[in-house]
Image (cartoon, rainbow, N blue to C red; front, side):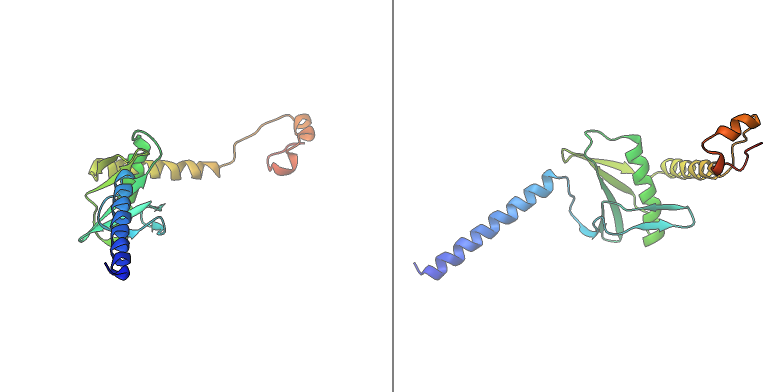
Length: 165
């Protein structure tokens, strides 16, 4: 047989083996099919909701965008679900399409589907509002009423606008 044909055949077989290996690795890592729109390189933000986030992967399937979040954990926590909930809101605002669901890919490659529900959305927005309120409270000074002799010897006197004496 011609050596050129043998080399071409060997390269074709090698290419097929590499392709099959890549498909197997993607499957074991929990990667879904679909066109990758973003791979941890797009920061989404919403000034209307005061949210910002960077999904690990956004998959485009037709006109739908599906977020994926990869975790090293063995099981899904409520925090993981809330994180996807924030991504649902951000993707809706960025792409004008509401994702019906998203995926949490666990450390073992298993995939857990999280539905985009009104309840999840309300919980995410409620938590975001609580965080903003707590941050506002950090700016409010804590009233201090110490005797002047304690204020004079305090190491934080220079940083305190309530020092007495």
